[in-house]
Length: 151
Image 1 (cartoon, helix red, strand yellow):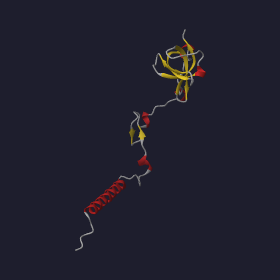
Image 2 (tube, one colour):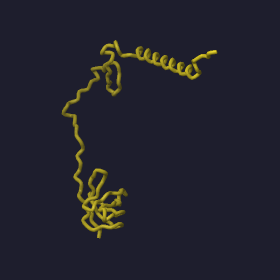
Image 3 (cartoon, rainbow, N blue to C red):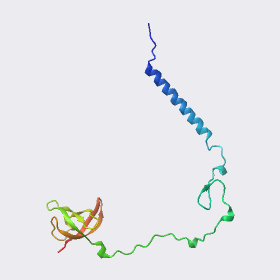
Image 4 (cartoon, one colour):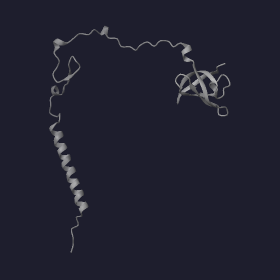
């Protein structure tokens, strides 16, 4: 005659749903037990002792040391002025397209590839030429400027 409408899959899904509901209820009870609600303001304070550790009791005022505000110095280190000769780099033109007006120079020191545009070239350059140049920060990285051939 008529069999049960509950299939194995439906039973498994119902079991999973009930298990999830039970786990959720347990988590809710656990949160309620560990809740900070109802605690006084004093119970929620945290203190730092003389060694920098967080403790629940206030530090002993006898261990307090007085620091004069004049003794506190907040500043950055002075940066020495750069020698203009240090800004000039040497490199080799690895690629240059005359028709499009751009190319790349491989820096001899850092071995990085630096973009160069025809507007920043003072002499006519070709691939494998040795050049001197300076760099500036562009939107996509370093750009070579004041590019000159090494005689």
